[in-house]
Length: 375
Image (tube, rainbow, N blue to C red):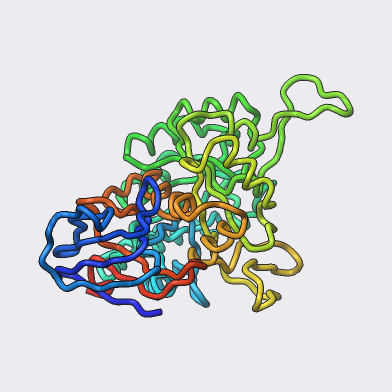
């Protein structure tokens, strides 16, 4: 596999083109100056004088979009955002959110955010920051920073006003969260809910206030019963309540063994809400005590994120029986839509030419970007 830039070049690719509506087996993608000018069937395509590359039966697909990624290889996003993003770019992720977890003080968090913001000028694959906290349920993700549990307006305003936060995860049951959620919506930040055991009414209220994403569905969540419970009955969990909501998206960590989310639960989510609203994420972290052949992290016997890259997540979805168009819906199109990225995530006329060439098993053969990743 190699990575290359085709900025300011005109070219055409022939192969099996993965489109929003399906696969064009005899397909064509034409690009001019880093922008897609045609994507569809080769037969009947408009004439386009350009250097052409026949890729045979390879898939031509949109670059992956990862909206939940803490690390790449051996480096955390807050340590070296560019190195982290380049690690994932080589594995097909052409758009990434650097994700910061709750375990930082306010001053540390601001420092890391500004570091990532500066890195965005050097590496255009970095599209912004996803904050996973600090306002989470402490029962579903430990924090060493007590101040993280208090919702303080001056602090969240200072963070939101950096203009680099794209997604912000919080637990709906945290006291005083209502004004916070309304404020981040007013700043154009996409609210996400997770690390939570919120009761159904709290979930529905959060969605009414603007929550659009569920952070890693079926993982780090619980149940708060509403009303009297009897032995042998099932209460509505946080995840169940989320699946009842219309118009929101659901992250899923798709590791190979179904450790974060059992394979049948991935299929259940798809059957319940459809693949148009599921988002594959890596939740990539750095851990120890981890089998090098595994795509999960285990630290001191506890699950600690994953070692996934988006190409491996895509192959895991394929192994679960999802079609190639469904896989790229979940790994490219849906995440871009969920955080309102705009011209990425799809092979569509007018979109950026962030393109992957893959074999039938979704192993990456080439990554093409619409820009030079290191300006």
